[in-house]
Length: 171
Image (cartoon, rainbow, N blue to C red; front, side, top):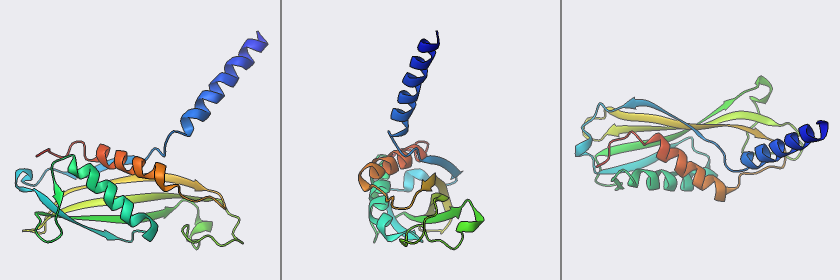
């Protein structure tokens, strides 16, 4: 009986470990939805605020891919919506307030724990009124020497943006 229990425990641990490596599991939230006239929106511009340089290009690209699924296209000159993607970094321990997670000095041996959040706000170009807002976020536990793997992260960003936009009206 004891042998069967150990076997079951080993199988369960292997399964959980395998699942843990499948993705980043980015959370999503919609904060403002649907006060606009969405049938009138065809094009949008994108700007970023406080976005770490190494994230900027592919986060914008993956947002564009997700938003294209709703029937909108990017046009930075002639647009109905202004989309702002802003990065927010939330430290989860007071001791880490002075540590920049994107500049890791060799002498820092602290594991960082923080929430990385990207807020998405959409403003109607003609009026400046906010017509939609949401966010994606993930809790990070970063040990010294770790770095972000862009390949898997791109897909997770696209999935998170698509999930966040799932109730945004289609054209």
